[in-house]
Length: 45
Image 1 (spheres, rainbow, N blue to C red):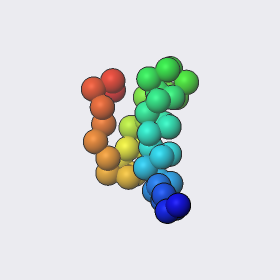
Image 2 (image 1 turned 60 degrees about the vertical axis):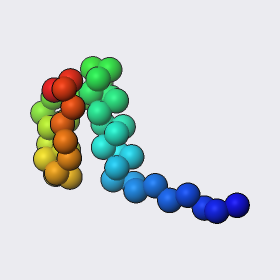
Image 3 (image 1 turned 180 degrees about the horizontal axis):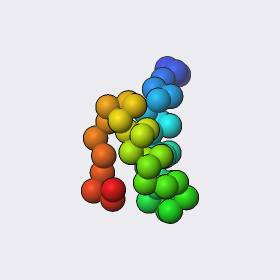
Image 4 (image 1 turned 120 degrees about the vertical axis):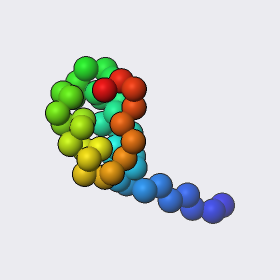
């Protein structure tokens, strides 16, 4: 069986997005994470 590698930074960003959507992470934290990783911010922000 082949080993699957998932980028830890990507997983962390997705987790932050899920937490933000649930209201468990504030908007400033959410935006700072996405700015840090130069990621696209979802429509939820």
